[in-house]
Image (cartoon, rainbow, N blue to C red; front, side):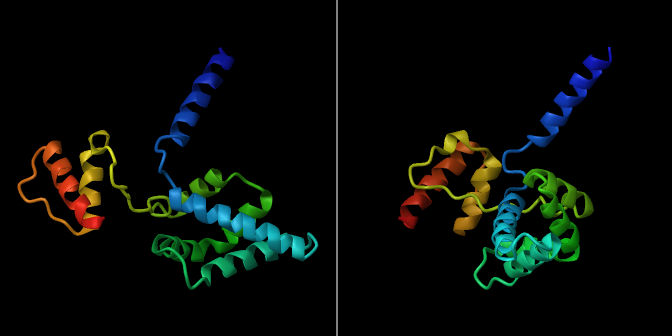
Length: 164
């Protein structure tokens, strides 16, 4: 009986982790970049003072002039939690687990997403209306009178020619 309950709990845990494929996409990119910078700094220091290397790597990333606006927003949320994030990186914790633990302290942390980009020739019929609206908004196009999904798809195809 105990084995069965453990299996059920494990399945619920797995479904919660993989709920959204774009969940924490900005966070995962930033934490992976932090881990790489940390590893290079740690090698330079000869493997000594891991926490200082992680904090220095974080400072180096936050100080970047040329960073994606979404990354900069995440750095802003990461600033008050930098010691905790640095400590978790030194433990060698998985990236998604770090993101989820930081998200518990600030729920907006994993809500940041990169904008949707549609290449010419994209099959819009497989996308959700919410995604179609977002692409139109990023293009700066309004869709007055759009009621059905086909209306949005038609407007996207019209504006696609303008972007080429």
